[in-house]
Each structure stands twice: as structure tokens, then as C-alpha cells.
Length: 315
Image (cartoon, rainbow, N blue to C red; front, side, top):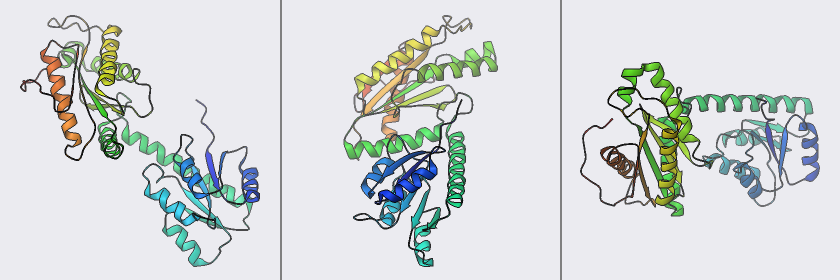
């Protein structure tokens, strides 16, 4: 796989400065440009998120210091390294820039070769941090998100749902008779089964904001911001059909011959009167209903709708 070129956002209100920096960085880097603070913030948080920002200090309206503060206050842009490039060369100016979160401070006029080396260094460090961050949030076996990543995503989606009053849906899935599968086929086959189920479930979600994660053991979860119960039920049914349609053999004598999953679905417009745990508990109850009803099926309901009494463990 060919790694994409690093992306650098140049923020400066002077076109001549943008041209100088752009000519220095192309073709080694993909270059984005902003001539004011609000545009810089929008592009930093956009789909083409930069690996590094070169930021002028003195700009009309919102100055570079305020841009940097807002970048560092936003979880979406907090980790993007910022290098200030400024004609302000006093020691206090540099100290201020570093104190509010910049990784470096370069004064004008600068030596192009030295600046380029500094940019390379900070981009390489950023990508290394991103790599280790990804490893810390990905399940080592199935390569979907792990429990830590899901917990963080659920908390963030819940806060966003409260602010925007948009629905939040959750699917909780469990591989049917997985203990029997492990006992009969062996743990190596069990691991492969979980990998396959994770891949099949992931293939049914298309939006970048949807998250499929391994919740624990043979349980998986899918978080879908902005989706109501009917849409989530449809996705869950597709997941159920995809696993069954893959026709993985389950040869334990007490099972009907194929691996399947049971899925519980819940949805809510987040509200301060509830918590993410309420949504999880509702999805878990719906999952138990699906198990009790015969497995290999979907059971769904809005948060607050009645459901049957709790049941014992149904693997």
C-alpha cells in the first residue's frame, strides 16, 4: 500500500507568504491554504484533515494565538501539531506560542532547508503517534475497534446527540452457541470465526461515523449516530443475514449446522435525564429477547419501551 503524502495547512493572510511556503513544500507535501482564522479552523476539522499546520501569528480578526487555542480546545483538532511562523522574534513571543500548544516557533526570515526539516520531523512524530494510537484502540484479533475505542466513541456521540438533538442507535450482537463452537472446533477455529463475524458486520456499515467494535468475548457492538430505530433495525438484519449467509459450519450436535448471531437494537435521542448506560442496557435486553426467541434474529425497540423479564445466560 502506498502511503499518502503528508498534508500541511498554511494559514497566512499574505498571499506572498503562502506562495513562498507552498513552493517550498510542493511536491513533497499536499498543501491546504487558509487566509483567516475561521477558515483555518474549518479546514483543520474537515475531511482533508492536515498532518501539520503552519500558522502566522499576526492576522486581522482572529489572530494566530486564538486559532491555536481553539484548535487545542477541540478534541477533533487537538493533536494536529502547530508551527508558528512569525516576524515577532522576542523570547516572550516564542514562549507564548509554545505555552498555548505549538510544537515549534519559527521566526521570519527563515532558512527554507531548516524549516523543511522541522516540518518533516513533526509530521513523522505525528504519524508515529497516530500509529500507536490506532494500535491502542483496535482489537488485536478481529481488527475492528476495541472496547476502549467504543466507550470513548459512545461518550462523544452521546454528548453530540444532546447538543444537536439527533438520535443515536446501538446494535449489540452475540455469536450464537459460541462456547459450543470453541469446544467442538477448537480455539484457533473460534478465533477465525470471530474475525469473520467482525468483517461481515463491518461490511454492512458504510458511513465513516458508524463504529463496529468488539465489545468483549464473542460480543460485538455497532454505534450509529443520527440513526433512528427503523434504520438501525435494517442494518442489524443485514448483519444477521450476512453472517448466516456466509455459511460457516457449526458442527456441534446441538446446533443446526451454521454459525449465526443474535442482535439487540436500541435507539434514543440523548437527553440529560438518561445516560449512555441506559442505551446499552436496552440493547442488551433486546439481545436477550432475540436469544430467547430462538437466536439468529434481531430484536429492536426504542429506549423506554417495555420488554420481557430478564433471562438467564443464553450463549
